[in-house]
Length: 210
Ligand SMILES: Nc1nc2c(ncn2[C@@H]2O[C@H](COP(=O)(O)OP(=O)(O)OP(=O)(O)O)[C@@H](O)[C@H]2O)c(=O)[nH]1
Ligand SMILES: [Mg+2]
Image (tube, rainbow, N blue to C red):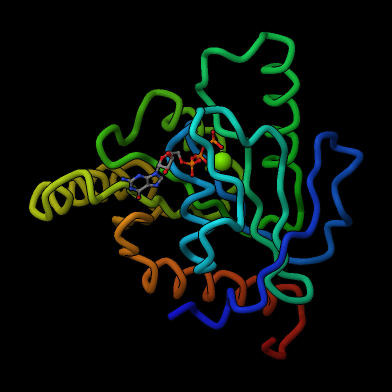
């Protein structure tokens, strides 16, 4: 069952330039991670619709910042993946600028969902992202996705290792396992996001629930 948070999800806007960003009035949660890690699939799985966000056969397909509206003033933001080598230098520089400016300066950004392939967690680029985004003081929740590719025991071991690493180095970061293929971890992630949106709204001074 789709969590109530996502029941009215709809595509909102695609952005390719900082100037194109919508006004920073609502509360946003960004989905970041390596190219092909499964960001768009995770958004589809949370929303409960297979063709909601664009999922690629080829890595590097999400090339713009895509906003999805959940309710008035509540957005999920699908970011282009990092680490895809085949992208021409000029385009890569454009993304890096767009992504880093968005992540660092966006006032309405409450936190980040950082997607990692459970078979390759905490890559060098993921650590750079954690290091760099932690400076904002905003929370990060790691989804170790494609958990269906490992045995349950192995997936649990990786989760424990990642949690230990995070609590030692990035205490404001949390982690869970996830699978878009098997639709696992959806309730846990949905509850966490509900908490973030509610906290963001309370902090913004709007007391009432949507
Ligand atoms: N087995 C399995 N495959 C998955 C899972 N999640 C995503 N995939 C596959 O991984 C590939 C990449 O998924 P996307 O959701 O497009 O990844 P992305 O992170 O949005 O990629 P970019 O937009 O290119 O950065 C696709 O072939 C998906 O079908 C999962 O939980 N399990
Ligand atoms: Mg994508």
